[in-house]
Each structure stands twice: as structure tokens, then as C-alpha cells.
Length: 162
Image 1 (spheres, rainbow, N blue to C red):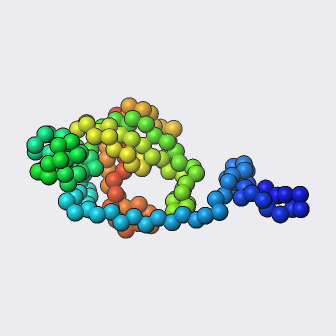
Image 2: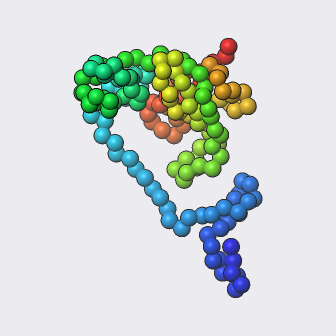
Image 3: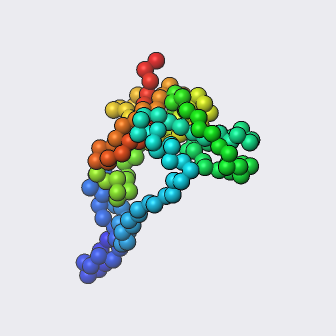
């Protein structure tokens, strides 16, 4: 936005995609996460093999996905690993068109939450060419692959043909 002299007075630009005005923050935000995984390394090892694991507290029976090294419910560290079946129903989804800077390299993508048959809610990218095919309550499964440009295995929600 320009002032009377033609100088930019606000960081507002036209969105190249929509042509509508957008606020461009003057600060760049770069994040690099370093998350300790001691106690849950097995989850990542299984992910490399295309398996999804959760944890179950041996003391109180609570189940956790993502897996926990210690039970938040009773604070026990006596946890066991359980295999997640990987099938369920789609609860909700959204098409992401306005992406954070670090995701600009990706085309628009779909994020969703699925309720798996084992009782876990899982948030993940949905692999689907046409989001118009997606319906709340439809059967889905968890699939594994490497995202383009990334060199590690991840899990995705995929619609299951009935």
C-alpha cells in the first residue's frame, strides 16, 4: 500500500494466485526442530519399514499415538509397543492453498484427520488427486512413502475404494 508520495507504507501486496491483497510480514521466520526421541526410537525404525506403532501403558492400559515413552495418565514408564492396524474413517480434511514459506515448493495439498479402527485419531497429508472425491466418513488407510524432496519415510492418509 502506498502513501501520498508513492512510497510503500504497509507491507501489502497483491497475491499472485488470487489477485487479492495480502499482508507480507516484514520478518522472516525459519524454524528447525530438534525433538528428542529417546524412548520412542522404535516408532521411527518401524516407519522406515512401512509400519505404524503406538504405545500402551502396562499399568493403566491407556494407548497413545503418537507413541509416548511415559504415560501422561499415570506417569508410568512401563510402556509396550502395539501395531496400529492402519484402517479407519476420514473425520475431516482441508485443502491447503496458503502455505508456510517452507512448504511453498509443494503444490496445494490436503491435510486430514482419520479415526483409525484401533481408536487413534491421526493427522496427516491425504494422498488423493481430486479432493472432491473425499467424503467425511469414507474408509481410508495409512500408507507410507517419501515426500518429494525429502529423504525420509512418512505416513499418509489414502482413500480406500469401497
